[in-house]
Image 1 (tube, rainbow, N blue to C red):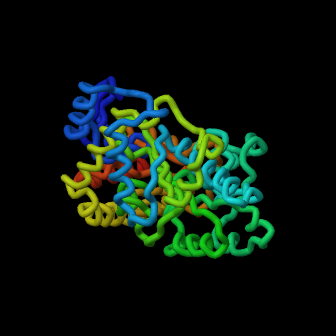
Image 2 (image 1 turned 30 degrees about the horizontal axis):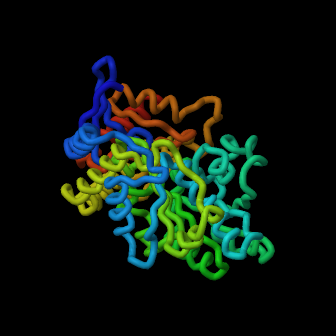
Image 3 (image 1 turned 90 degrees about the horizontal axis):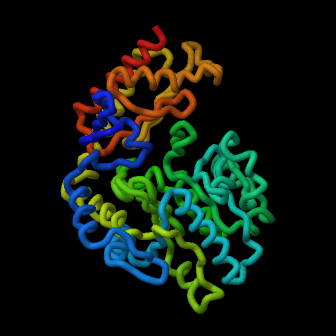
Amino acid sequence: MVEGEGVWLTDSEGRKYIDANASIWTNIHGHNHGVINDAIRDQLDKVAHTSYLGFANPRASELAQRLVGFFPDDDLQRVFFSDNGSTAVECAVKMAVQYRMQTGDAERTHLIAFDQGYHGDTMGAASLGGVGEFFDRFRKFGYPVSHVRDMADLLSLDSSEINKTAAVIIEPLVQGVNQMHVWPKNMLLQLRQWCDRHGVHLILDEVMTGFGRTGTMFACQQENVTPDFLCLAKGLTGGYLPLAATLVREEIYQAFRGGAERAFYYGHSYTANQLGCAAALASLDVFEQENTLSRLPEKIKCLDELLTKMSYYHPQIYGVRQCGMVAGVELRDANGNTFPTTDRVGEAVSLVAREYGVLSRPIRDTLVIMPPLSISQEEIQVMCDGISRAITCYFD
């Protein structure tokens, strides 16, 4: 890929594609966006990066203020910056465990995560993951974690397990790597209530779902849930530069004050770098200037209607799972049986889709559809037509 404009990418041979997975779920406002470009250039003329370890910079302070402004004043009011989704999760988990050590609950060192979830590839985050192919060989090196399938499993845990648990982590509303598995309505609210009853912290991994993907700025806002830790990355900078943030409640932050022995020792060389923060601030400006969120309902409806129509015409579409502008189209044979994994059908169909101007990446045999939010309804039509034609071409 050598050029981009809006939702379109151009490769080195001059071929153009709709970026149907937003450059691995990062791009929000389209490529080569003037506002974000200008913000990065302006910051570059001042300074590109200075250490955030023991120092501060204006862009990071402004960004932290903007982020906490999405939540009530007595909720998430502190921000810890890092550089990617895995580290945002690592920060949250390490804080959750260290918090217990410093508040008289040192025996609470275990975590609960959901089966088939994905929270990153660094060792701590990997131990939370529920996809065996990715994590089983490394499981013994990470955190002590119990995996549950759903709320019924969680409710069945006995008190001995709960009493040693520091936190629960979940991808709210929809699991990404689990072939776009959509959680039942109100499940997140029930989880928040369960955590409150048992004194367990709630960590929300919104690395994929944040910044408008599900139809609201953050997925948790759809069920009026505020977590104890909120992990953000991917779309934070509009898809331009690596940057992550872990938002925490004030009382959690306060437990780390009082001397070096209570400090949270975690930091990266490029933590809160000025170019990334400038891009993130510009992306938040674009949300306001272009009324990004208020324009989503019509796009979401358009995508839903086109995917429903597509599934009607293709017997190989076993199911469509959609949450806002996030969708997965699962392929199986006409009898509903999964294809042999060695056939790599999802990969093959995605490769054919390139011939029809659509660029995406499957999860097993589920075609992922997650374009930049700036995509127009006409471009949604082009994208869905390309995917439909690729399915026809492959199976006919």
